[in-house]
Amino acid sequence: MTHIHPSNLSVTLVDGYVDEPAHFGVPPYISTYPRFTAGALVDAGVPHDQITYHTIDALRDDRGRWRDVADADLLIYLGGMTVPGKYVGGTPAEPDEVREIAWTADGVSMMGGPVRFGVGDENAGAQEMERQNLDYDYLAMADVEAAAYDLVESGLEGFNDRYRSTDELDRWASKGAFIVVQHPNYPEYLICEIETSRGCAYRCSFCTEPMYGDPSFRTADSVIREVESLADRGVAHFRIGRQADILAFGGDGEAPNPDSLRRLYSGIRDVAPDLQTLHLDNMNPITIVNWPDASRECLDIISTYNTPGDTAAFGLESADPVVQDQNQLNVTADECFEAVRIVNEVAGWRPGEDPADAPSYGIEAPDRLPKLLPGINLLHGLTGERTETFTHNKRFLHRVFDAGLLLRRINIRQVMAFEGTEMAETGADVAIEHKKQFKQYKQEVREEIDQPMLRRLVPAGTVLPDVYLEYHRDGRTFGRQLGTYPLLVGIPGERPLGKTIDVAVVDHGYRSITAVPYPLDPNAASMDELTAIPGIGSRTAGDIVINRPYDGLADVPVSDVDLSTFAHASGYDEPRAD
Image (tube, rainbow, N blue to C red):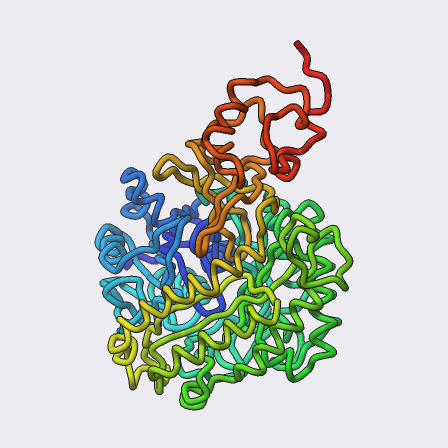
């Protein structure tokens, strides 16, 4: 192979999306992998304008983009799903598509990311995953960004698998920020996953995160510089999601470090004062239980600097003590309940109220989402799972609800068994054996917990600002806010896509809500929008339409319905301009 100087190298990055226990990259998210890899390439001497980035969805939508795959001197595929999920903003690459990319590339091809842990027949749970190179010239078995740097340095003649150094990450994270402008969602509907650490102090049987070793932390200044580089390019949405436990940032991997966390959050606000989203993901409930005072201080810091609707994902995984013991799970149901209570009390306040009033709900609560609430992860198919496991999990969720606490979301999934984890010995056998019971149990949780919790979390009249409209289905428009685990919002009628609107909640599904544009204009609202409001039937809606226009809300012919909850009075009390 002819040695190619970095300055003459053309590189195409293909993002097949990632979903790891502590890392997310399905649109509207962009993971760290393409950004860090782009930064490594630039650091190795490849010019910015010779690096092309495509998502797998962009390749699907436009076959002409495949020329960039075929013609590149170096093709790098980035992807891999190590936890199963359902996605709205994008569809992760399937194995056959990943192979097609390799077959199309005429130059050197390399793949990396969590795909190195294994590949299944599809991106779903209850599967056993095998390591495969999928016909690529190289498979990066450590850090793909380090492999990219070394491969370019060698003139595309090879590399040794290794992990990046701290100094390299400090450079590459900022240098690679430029790649975001090539994402199809840029700039309005793109949220950047931010890494603060990787690795984990604990060794749960199913999890791939311990394969990164013990926790290794970036400095707050390094993260802040990366955020500044992204903000300079117009990024306004950030999620501090790439870590096993945000509370442990800057510490020993287990105990909270409030000073480091304050430096991180305040520094991000300083360099990105116009940010619109600042959320997080993973938080270990055992940290809160073992260090309650320091954790309370950290939770107060987060809820001071973040944006509303934030979620701290708690990896309970199972409330069954037998499953906990056999899978080295680090938190009991009682301990997780205590952590849920503390987060509710310290960080679950809604903008516009005294934080001491948290958690609040009902007609007296402010009409905004709480600042930070826990989310619960439950994983099925683990070693030791039995019929009683499903009962233990439901009992825990009912206990939380009956105590008057709030959960932002409940994530129920089935295990994926990866080589190198303890679950590789058991595989997906338990999950497959219990699939019928799992399906029934999941539906029961949706009916008994999810929907009542959603009514408590976002009662009718709750306002959700900046909902991005994504697709149409069955005569309705569906959208979401940017952030961690955003609620799916259905709006009556087909509205223009790619826009953001404010909405007010009118009804609740199991994991989604129905809403109307806020403030609703009685002089312009459609019949479908009017009848969506609780208490307004088709006859009343018809009367409203027939008798338009109105000078104020008091003139609208409704009884026993407080329209001001959905239609802001100040918008209509002014005399109309005839």
